[in-house]
Image 1 (tube, rainbow over the protein chains, first blue to last red):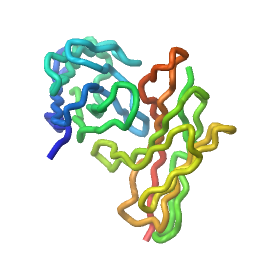
Image 2: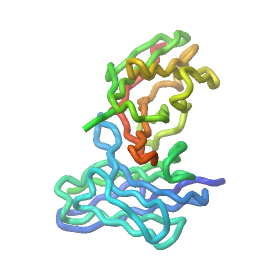
Image 3: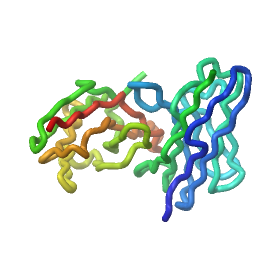
Length: 113
Length: 116
């Protein structure tokens, strides 16, 4: 079945460590997105990519990095520069870059110890 | 900055009753709106969408109403079931002055609880 796969589902990390969250889609969508969700809050855009080898900062990009070397993959690295990284991270894709619904993965919950 | 917001953070309804979840938006340039359902610990799922040239759209047990005059969006769920318990988000897709779309902006969500 087509969809978006995020891994790992749960991740623990010590302060000062970088961690990379995986996001893979087999929907042949051009655009991919990373959102952060904190308890009781909405989704905030971290980074997005509308085409391979190109990506743009969202509203809260500081302390994060991404790459888009393949259409199917859009990994997110949470760096040690991110001051409050504990959150639920959601990856999404969209068929067209400017319209239509987002398809979401099941999320990755990162906890910094 | 402009943002999407919700009138109520929580809503409790009796099983079998109809539910109405409201959303206010402030960007008059938005031309596309979506409702998502998010169950605990999972990613959001698409429920229904509506474009700004419409004021009503119906799906299976759900109806979305758009009032552009007062910038208000609502989601109506008929005959609410226990499986409808979740957080519901509205999202808007604002158009830039150039005519190209910006990215979706999400509200903070409403927790719907269905009581037995």
